[in-house]
Length: 282
Picture (cartoon, rainbow, N blue to C red):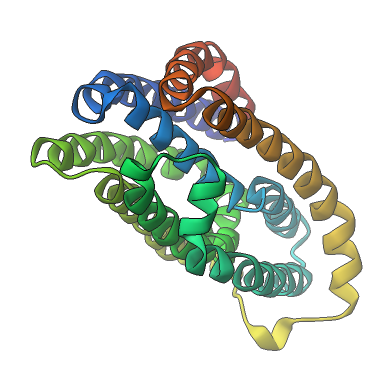
């Protein structure tokens, strides 16, 4: 059973990663054709900004996964419920405090990032939309952690494979009908909301003993959450900040075309780590 679970998760992890990379590679020339090389560079900066707006939630998801996996082994679901409820409350407060201002001041943020006037309004709209969606994504990170901690990574990877293809088709469609960055952001945001909804319903089936409830918040859980999740969060946040600074610096220093060249090169080189990441996830 263990070998079957690991093998299934690994197989679908590889498939999902390969499909994700291939679909994004397919969209690169299409976006450049409709928005130009500079437009693709702006889109890459918007996507990097959206990644930063997750607050490095990969670390929190890792902690949630650990707590759920331990509960499935020792049967102490009360402690897991307390840790997940406390962590979710913390992420919700941080997201509201950090992302609501981003949504309101998105145009100033886009201007400071070096976005040229021709793309300023659409980039600002994209940032505002993604800020609100990432607020929900951060607050709902526990549901993905529950499914992964319940040893059903394969379910998430199957659905993410479907969403990658759907995103590609959606982006191609909005570009074909003459829409721009804001419409592309809406497609990406819709995909994120669909993923969160799927995680919510599946988590209730995979590990029904885990329930998030604000009455389960405990002061004693703060130390454990910050001790374990905080370390992962800090490392991931620094990594995200580093990856965000480079395209913004190139955009401000050399313009949108150079940012577009960097984005294309990064997309192609990034495919080299696809299989490694797919094997590491299970």
